Image (cartoon, rainbow, N blue to C red):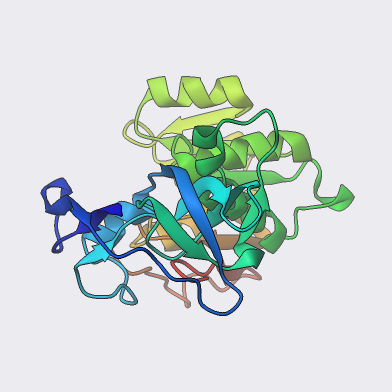
Length: 260
């Protein structure tokens, strides 16, 4: 079968379409004929060697997909650690979900990584349920895949949402989806902006995927007993946190990245 293979670590030039062996379903796995696969920032990180758990190249890229289960003929969408950019995949049944009848394969293939991550972030922050409605959430990279999903889910949950992005154009697009407060971090310091908008109170949760100095800055945007949910490191830098300078009742929580 054909697959998009990471031949070595690097940029787009390391991707090659190759003939590779068809996967064999191990005990309990399901073979799926892939119709579409989603492209995420995590795939870029994989190609660049950003995840310590990634096997050495060559390997097939891709984490989310939609297609047809060969054993049942039913349409499914799913998640695997890597290997989705291929004509077939072998997936665990608990990581496969039925595709709504009105969805295209392309739409379904773009759902698992972004929307499940965003929903789990809300759940991890304790904001899913009646008690969470009206809570304040700061979403970094709000115009990205997970950010956009977090806005759409947050609107359903009744969140008051603040989002950071690099341009007013991106923020305008996400405001159409329900974002109430957009912060262009190239023009404004988001820590100061959050304090100004909330009159010094801060937010209940921050969805943080930048890493580096932003982890500490994010904690300073919190209300007491607020939570920072960490699910990535787009800067490629380890989280920096001064525990002495942040001695307030706040919580850090981590979502597993690149694991099934």
